[in-house]
Image (cartoon, rainbow, N blue to C red; front, side):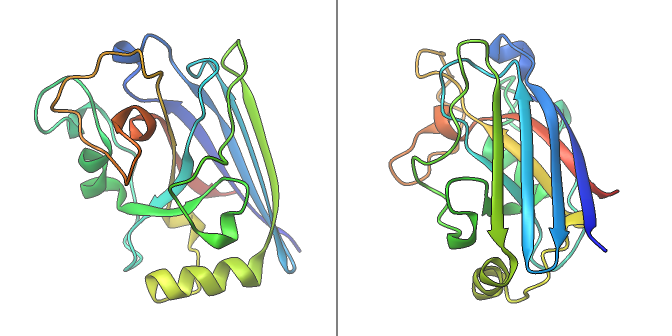
Length: 185
């Protein structure tokens, strides 16, 4: 019997980015595979959107960030400000999730209307092995995770207080724009 998890993805930072990204994610574990489907609407158009599940390695339940997490009062909830409630970035939803190589350029790109759909079939054992190497356990604990969608155009003016640079990628790439709590269906 397949296990199914879902997340309703709601906007974050919408008033600052000029659009209200929203959508849904489904994770179906069936035998040795996990099927991931993410459908997003009203994201910044023609932009690559990093997307991941975040959580706490110790299994503490992650919660979604809200405007209340804007610790420095700059009007944006940036990536570091999500960590106290959501934990760390764990599994990327890119071309190869099981490789768990977060910074890369193989994430979905929204079309001119701000829509994209992501579908991936992942080898569960390969993902669990990489997850255990990174976090000490092979239990993904999806029902204790949250999904984040990131990314705004380079042309959006961000205050210097917005943090989130990862390697050679700046805060425009990592700024959270939508978030959802993953629940068991």
